Image 1 (cartoon, one colour):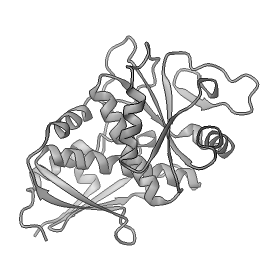
Image 2: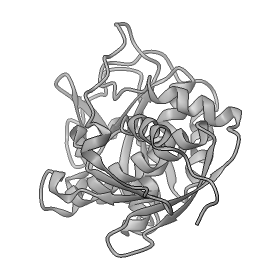
Image 3: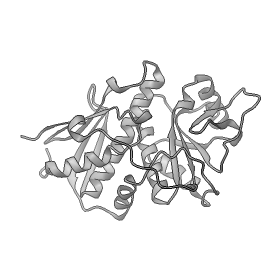
Length: 273
């Protein structure tokens, strides 16, 4: 048991900020339990969009993203997290907390949380030199691979949807200067899907801090043929694509408004007596 522990007001503020994490179709499929041992994260399977394996993958990816957002928010509040992933049956992660002054990097990522949006609008201009290599290094810290999807292999469908195009004689065009990145893991386990969600959070926050626009995507990977074809082309069939991230310089237009999130009281139980 820790000798110090954040008070309820700090924890509520942290979890409120963490709730800004990206999730598939803004389902926010997570639950928290807080007691004197720390913070526990659970999947809320009632909020998944279907019963397929890709729907289960989306839930775990979303939980990985909120886990990383939570750790970032805690660090900025002066609490480091020791994360144990899948420690017990039904528990996705347990965070043991230790009081520690925040570093500059923690503040930078935490500040980006309020500004990050899933921006599906057209992007403009090329990425800064070395940006993709930097993000690859960040992904490696989570044991996750990052690669670029060839431009001819994806396209914009309508105003706000995107698709992979394998085996299509008219592959289309992305319609802007965005790059499409793919996050993949060496194994397709729940633990690695959680890690991929953490990496997705880290990369999109880092991009936001650098003034870039991003949009996580999983819908194009629901077609298993396209998912397998992408894995074979980009990773020689040795990794499992988990999520896509569309990345670029923001185009013209006003900043996107925040999306409504579930309140802490709806997602969290406290047992601090």
